[in-house]
Image (cartoon, rainbow over all chains, first blue to last red):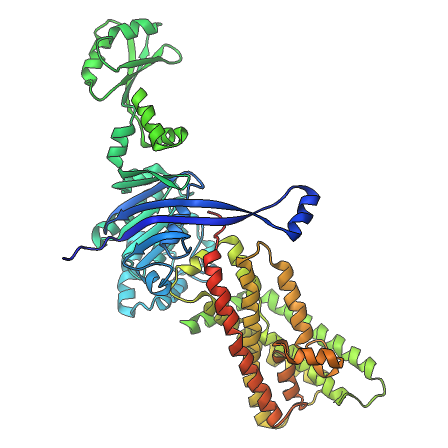
Length: 348
Length: 261
């Protein structure tokens, strides 16, 4: 029986760091000289997940949640404290030199290009490092140059590139050896919206045409919405959500909102009376004769709106809004865990 | 690929010419200072422990020039890369980090050999009374010994640099290593002039293989079979130092903690 191997398989993965603790004051510093105190910090706590080939998966979490540590273990940079990892059929840190030929890595905050030499020089060096045949390299480079519009940049030294230009070059550099799996650690950090959009489109195309599996960490939820069919959410080293983006929204969304601007002062009681027979509809008064009506999914929007419009209240403006992914994620973090978030959903 | 690393480092060095010029000045001042220092010590004496003044001058000039080739800052480079976290990038490439560092160091050494050591030696020969060996075999042997000097010194630098995986700050360690190497390699004073017990200790340390052994061959202090034995000793040290490097490396991989998330 042949089962296609998933791109990434993680079981009970854990990483513990020993961090030096500095004692306070001069006396403490002198004591530190002779006996150091260490604190064990567990950055990743027994997480498990599987990513099939060809999937684009978003890996999100607050700073210090353990995203980067996980990526670094998957890429063979860090050795796990315990647990197993298989990426592209390899145990990353054990056969590192063979393994890394199958992956590409981009760190948004670090450059993998040589700072002082021209971009094209870096590419040629990478070709030799990865032993890419000259013909394959040519073809690949032409494609990347066209897709990422690198034409004018190739002969400039890396230190003279803008952040957006550099990031496009970094992406190209990580793909020259045609890796099956691409790890992106905050690839759009600090970029303007135009470059962000370009990079997202490029990644989608890459995934579609080459079937490249992509795992990316980000703080920008628009990256996730544009790219990912699946989201893994991390908090304090544990996975608190793993599933589709739509499901995340459906489960944790506070429903839809209708924002109303009135031409006269309207009391909360009066509004609540209007929708009293609609289960779950809630009102909240805003500033300057405005109000927000929250409508759960079971109630039709037109029905809810008809109650207000038909009541003869002077309405100046109506806006519809859906809870954004941003808001959902913020809520989940604020509540601390998935369980807490579910409680939160139950209330509204 | 490793040849390209050497080439790139060579080009990078060329890009930072100020370092290069200031390096020439520092080395000239050092050689000049030691020349006058030994001149004063010798006074009217013909020789000290078998070293004539001419031999001593040659020794000083050649040893400093050799240092230009074998010297590198691999320990500091490793420490910096570990500290700022850019070492992470090195680990996603299909090559051995330490080997890459070694070749980068070699590119640097080659740069200084061509741009610095050779022209420097010519200039020094014109200014100071220096005796060059006439036997081409000695030149050949010396060239081989220089390569070993580079290897042993770089291996020690790699060992020191790996300390960065264990300690937050290894500046002190690096400085200490440099002083120890400069002293026990015979750069400051030829080991033949050390007091007996210190000379005995030095015999058993790898440092003398970096500077003293090749320079002694070059100045004719050691010759014939003794010179061959000196090369053998260098080779032995170069091979032996691989063992602690491997052990430390394996442990360091597990301890690596990448700064900045």
